[in-house]
Image (cartoon, rainbow, N blue to C red; front, top):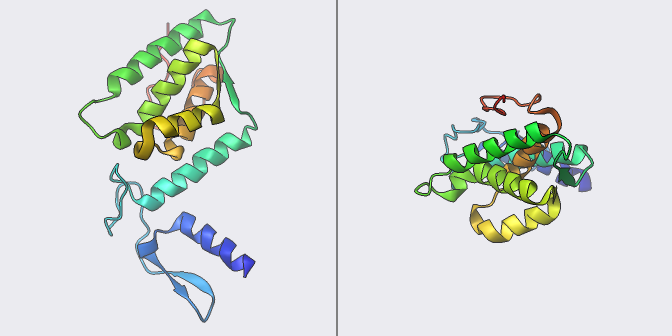
Length: 177
């Protein structure tokens, strides 16, 4: 029975509940059809940001796993690199300008997390990721997303260490000085 529970959890990471059913004869889950992606859940089972809830769950798991693989709990600002600190200050301004007070917070949580993480890092010089996550959960309440939080940690940590060399997608990166 324990193996079945693991199979269920693994399957839930890949498919939303409207896309699979449990087959009692085979004691396994079977795909029913559509596999939801970021913005295309045909069943309209979406979170506050309008994304397929299963996509959100996968994003959360992937971002947290990526962070845990780093085996670190603290992001530290480089003390001997004033140029990078200036770039990070400019990045913080960019994040703050992206936040729209008229849009739901949940739909902007990725940018909010990046902004808050970077702001705290620049003020204190280091950031304990897990302590700050608990603080953010309390502050943001239902809008908070662990997936967005850990994704933001990965992005900011990459900016601090490599200047954004590992960024993917359409991110703007750090401005050259």
